[in-house]
Length: 83
Image (cartoon, rainbow, N blue to C red; front, side, top):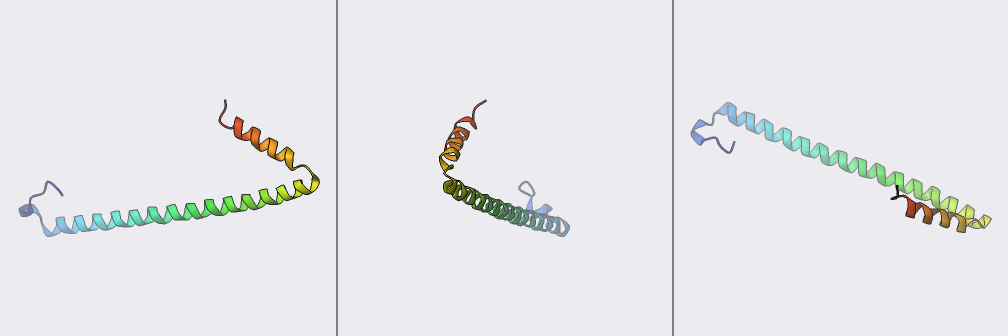
């Protein structure tokens, strides 16, 4: 497009450019839609995991075992980036 001289532009070339631009716009919209869809699914999964964790935490507090979970989480945090 950028190197095409105006005198060399034809009706077919304009139609081809217009079609290409529409396809690129559609591709951009599809990517945005997919990105938002994946983000929503990930957020929902994280919310669900958090609910389960909170429920487990409540059970452990009641059973007097929450300090063990805190200790395990600290160890996991320290070791997760290790070899």
